[in-house]
Length: 114
Length: 247
Ligand SMILES: Nc1nc2c(ncn2[C@@H]2O[C@H](COP(=O)(O)OP(=O)(O)OP(=O)(O)O)[C@@H](O)[C@H]2O)c(=O)[nH]1
Ligand SMILES: [Mg+2]
Ligand SMILES: [Zn+2]
Ligand SMILES: [Zn+2]
Ligand SMILES: [Zn+2]
Ligand SMILES: [Zn+2]
Figure 1 (cartoon, each protein chain N blue to C red):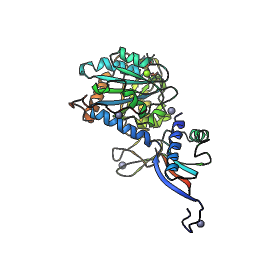
Figure 2: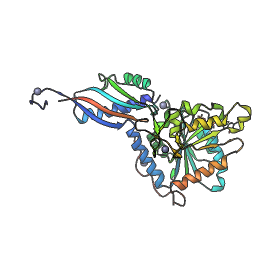
Figure 3: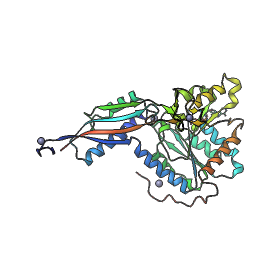
Figure 4: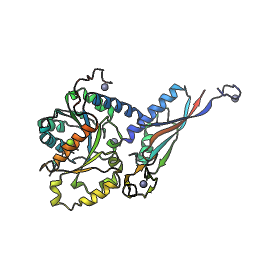
């Protein structure tokens, strides 16, 4: 259950930003989780709800943007059908994961500042 | 202060970050990678389910790679024991246990700290045996040169489809315990097919630590990696790991 250690890293990062900007309150944060990020969104939410109590994020709702994984050919741009072998037969080339499919990012924080 | 009229009201500002949640780990991993490459060490991260045969592959590597004259070393993650490190030392690989307690994966800091317990600079090939787990270890960069996923024939051909993130991270899949195939309903073609659907550059080796089958190809793959990372002929063991470990 690395979701807990991820949430810990996330909250530590938010705390640093709050400190840096002398923020009074965190109103929300948004994260992006790709289908191939190796993270279970439900577990991530549970971990967040467990961990945020007593932290700067205590009253900050978490917005999760989930990105489906899609693959395409780097040379002819053909889309690889979902579930198919990850190569373009026409170009004899390995497929490339489109942006966001493995994302695990903190996109933004809504901060209340003086 | 409110910028419109200068009253004392607070303001709500959206701070755009777009930062990797694992940025801290990635930084520590880059640091480890510099250490390994400076010292001429090929670091390999071995992942796989509990009992997939990771330690057995390493024990067999000590025998199979003997003619190469490589100096081997390892750190081995274990929740509670140091059994694997003891087994590896017995097999002739200087090893150190990383007791992870509850953690279900290694991270770059854990690996960095463990380096202080072993003369890793005086190795040519350094194995990092990760916690037995097909999920979490995949997303933690440790500073390795390559990721190896050990998958035993007893685990079923569909594992790559169920754990795509692990196989996406893999540079090589080692299919282990192949000596058991005659006793199982195991379909190697189905496994190869599943791997091709989760790994864009599939690279698969079939071996048995028991019979020694496939170990030559495994040793050849390691040699190829040393070459690819510019480590062949490099004067190793000079870079000193001088700075103090992080607390
Ligand atoms: N028949 C056969 N058994 C094997 C082979 N390799 C490993 N085993 C057996 O599989 C079991 C697990 O092997 P380990 O090497 O301890 O596996 P591991 O992946 O290191 O396990 P953990 O570190 O505990 O996750 C042991 O009982 C081994 O004897 C093999 O090539 N053939
Ligand atoms: Mg082991
Ligand atoms: Zn985990
Ligand atoms: Zn193409
Ligand atoms: Zn105002
Ligand atoms: Zn260091």
